[in-house]
Image (tube, rainbow, N blue to C red; front, side, top):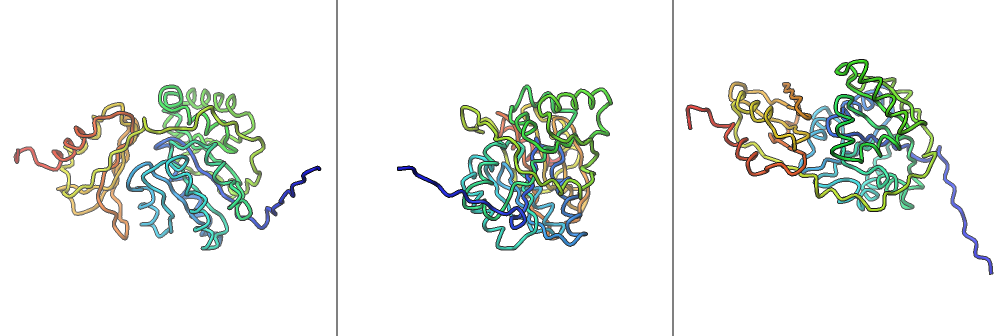
Amino acid sequence: MIETKERLLFSDAARIPVHLISGFLGSGKTTLLQHLLNYCLANGIKPAVMMNEYGEINIDGELLRGQGYSVREMTNGCICCTIGGTLGLAIQEVLTFKPEVIFIEATGLADPVELVDQITKEEVLPFVRLASLIAVLDPINFSRLAEEMYSGIRQQTELADVVLINKRDLADQQTLQALTAEVRALNPRCEILLTERGQVDHARLLQTSGEMTRQPTRSPSAPVHDHFHTLTVLCERPFVRERFEQVIRTLPSTVWRAKGFVRFTDSDEQWMFQYVLGDFAVEWIDLLPEPPEHVVLIGKGFPRDALSAALLTATIPRFSQ
């Protein structure tokens, strides 16, 4: 007896396109997402946003929410493993709002193969289609990250439909040319765009409509992110500005990314700071509702207790000690 199985075919026109934005910590994923959302709203397209943060609090989600966007958050775990099993349920929840496009910004630690598996599960496949995988790269730190820290950044690049080499204004021509050649060697089929602060032809980016042209191959073992650590510190008191900056500027090399919302003793305003592998910036923000003041550190095997103590000490003026 010959067993036959019915093959279900789904109309692309009836399914909601999903654009998956990946890239390592601090590469500029959220900035790109903000531009895409602005484009959608300006052109009458109803977007839905799903964000994942490898930590207890999603700072990027707070930033978008403070600008008036609705965000579905998945925190305190990596979207591809710790909370991967709930991604399908989260997508179904988002579908109740009847969006016309869905953006998923994954933590920079996520395995893109597992994400593709989650987005194409049978319970959501009739309703959504994976329109594009977008990888955002930092030209200054890409090679070091790919070789020394996390092989997943290479896999994100290999599978991407579009690769944005972001922050081109911070790199010299030789570095940009070398990275472009490296990306092309890793992924001959992708489109490579050089950008500053995620500025790109967003209409063109959203018109990417092809499903995966080749099936990704899974690595022999599923990703385990136990070697990635996070520390979230709630800030009950304002920081002494120069002491806080000293702590952040002297973070050990095992802290790859730091960010958060803070207050300083010399100001009544709230500030947002960003730190990526030695690069530090702080800027005044005006978000409503105001997110709680907190600092998030992400890295590998850094001294959590010592850094918590250092941050606490940074709230105390020197003459008070």
